[in-house]
Length: 129
Image (cartoon, rainbow, N blue to C red; front, side, top):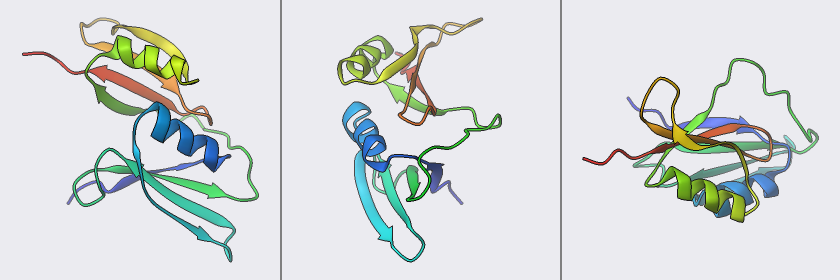
């Protein structure tokens, strides 16, 4: 068994695709409109679906925004340099909500950014040997 994907409902698919592909550097793997159901599914990730876990962005055409709820935490992405990842995110118009630095009560370097719908993405800096 393995995790295939995590699904996020998004209010504006184009803004979300721009964020995940241009700001975070993921690839759009596939996209399909379902006119009878009035929704679109778009799958993005760093690897293809056969070899990695991806995100499914679900856009219900008649829903411009969602209440994110209290149960969801964040998506974590390993980066080589969390400080540089924050700078790149800001340069590309993304929102950094916690600048890179050591985590509270630890030494791991982390940062947080927000996608256009308000979902939190944590950058975790790759540890060097």
